Image 1 (cartoon, one colour):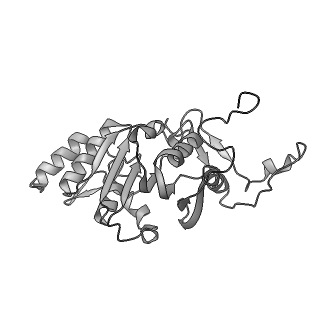
Image 2 (cartoon, one colour):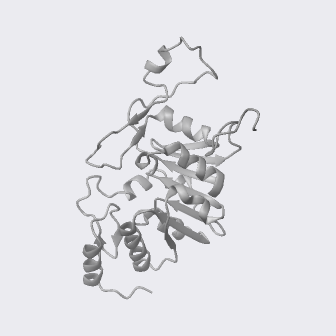
Image 3 (cartoon, rainbow, N blue to C red):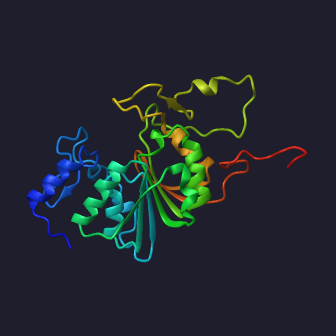
Length: 253
């Protein structure tokens, strides 16, 4: 049970800063000057209804949990077990404190997305929110989520830039058919060599068509698109040739 006073919470929030999640901890805002305002709550309100309000008996993995906003929302909906993982110790300290203030029993561990196999278990719901564009190897990460931790549902979100339209793609194209690559609505993954939005961890930013194609390629069927950047997916069999390990072919196969 949280017995901290408002002043004690405010002092801890300041000591643990800066924060990216603008949480409300007993009336104390963790990032009151956030450039996106009430974030991520403002985002959550646009797709919250797409996730069951009763998660009793469900296990949830929150990859790249940051300060734990989505982990806490899942626990508030009754999830039996919620595990948040992040590679940043500062974010994990924030998440543990926020969960303590809100009297929520959530596990938080330091773990890279590339080491998900170390968990040795699958989860009913996997959250992959705001992670893809921070990764140098984004499709590898999606492959690992599919291969090692996703049992059923994936909730995915990525910043998107470029065309918001998506065109149906053929199964194959002739070598000399190059016009498809110039179409704005074709799948495109934009590479950031230096920084974007003053953030050196922004590496790859997809357009809508690319985000959807990457999900399908990794073995996730899109079942709902409740918000421009958010997809609810069902884990299915990955297409032939997909996976984190390059398929062995030839005489040695």
